[in-house]
Image 1 (cartoon, helix red, strand yellow):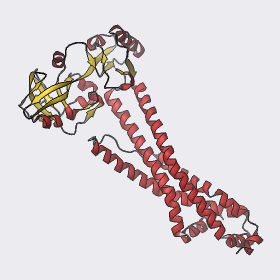
Image 2 (cartoon, one colour; image 1 turned 90 degrees about the vertical axis):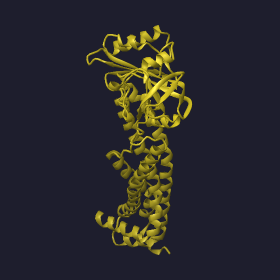
Image 3 (spheres, rainbow, N blue to C red; image 1 turned 30 degrees about the vertical axis):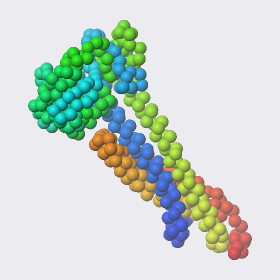
Length: 393
């Protein structure tokens, strides 16, 4: 009986082809919006977690200004941090804005102080050059690709940073975007000199964007954090926060989930509109098929059979909208990701994620929305008296 009702509901949906498609489109739009937002959010969450793991890593402590505001710097002595028992190594990322003159341009540009130990901590600091070579001696500078164009400088040219001359020994690869790892500035727009030379150009307290501290495998994380906190208090730094990998990942994921839930709620409004469309279609179908319902009951169909028939029809329309919305939503997510990547020159930074849970959830929820939307019309159809239904004109 259930199989017969299923095929009968399919036949009825095909019979009302245009109206059924318009109803399916209502569910499709809502499902597509929800899938697109959630898949982008999941992809972004995975990308950020992977980035944090590469930048910070396990058994590692991050020292930064409160709220991870890289525009606000903190005071610390990286050598004193390295001397804390249990610390294997530590780096501090420091950038300064300097007046720079080149063969074909000049202006105020970001300068990064480079420490070779950075390569151990941050994947983006394994600098790859498109032309020339890496830093080897004092008086040398690497240029980001956009910086090189702005200054009109190439390998072998001389640029002046705050009145001091440096020889360009390399141009970084154009695709190396950088970002968080370099103090919030893309590598494309930076000049890179050795950290000791940056300290000479900008003497005074050591103000850094953030510091990364790596511990020995068996080091006591809590004890090291407490000693770092004591050091920060000793140098008068009150705006710093100490974060390990788990703290940082949990904080970022919580923020992304909040935004994702808010946007999914907005998209859910479109799904609600689609549900109203299903209810309207099914209610109209009940009015059009009163005599058919009467005939079904006259030949022995029970109220439950009529109810199931209409629930199948509304549920299948919801499921069809869910399947098409799933495909469309993931396609929209991919296109949106590509557009954002091109606009911000962050190719391959992240991609939307379509998890099995999202697929099953989207299909089940769209079927459920369709079925629930058709519940009242189906109940009304099931309660029609057979004699009144046969007399209905």
